[in-house]
Length: 228
Image (tube, rainbow, N blue to C red):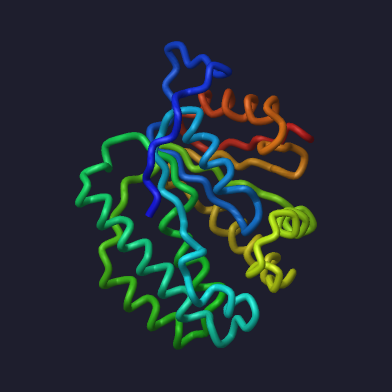
């Protein structure tokens, strides 16, 4: 689990009387930039982070090579990892401080439904029911979108060896699953960001404009598509 504090808020952003969301969750497909945005927001607002730890999942590389045989252990490992992270948060009593996360707990079931067969999904759901997964609801969810070609390029550029085996079919299936999930999502204010035409990594202006937009959101569903 990663829950460390980042540096102080940058001078580039003057919050004035504006208050950023206290708990932000960033979601989206593999390679879309969840963790990068999470860390940048944490640095900007001096927030703690709650991060996925895919590098600690010993089944993930096998799953990318052979999804059918490794899907169940991969999903169960992520589920148990999340449960341990949440228990650690409770023990440390750090639900109250502001933070930003690069996942929603609901994403576990989304991935399970995509990757598991009927019997495996039943077993997964039984394990899920017996775990304590109560987490505070985000004050803002940011859903990052990108088309398949953009995801492919970003995955290649970051050069993680295990991700070389990710198939286009799997990425496309996840894109569709995320679209369906967020079509019905109403648990928190939602910002849907089309990242195809913006660069939140290397363009300070693109990032600044996105952060400024966050301050305008208090409820409902919003679309951020500056390239349109």
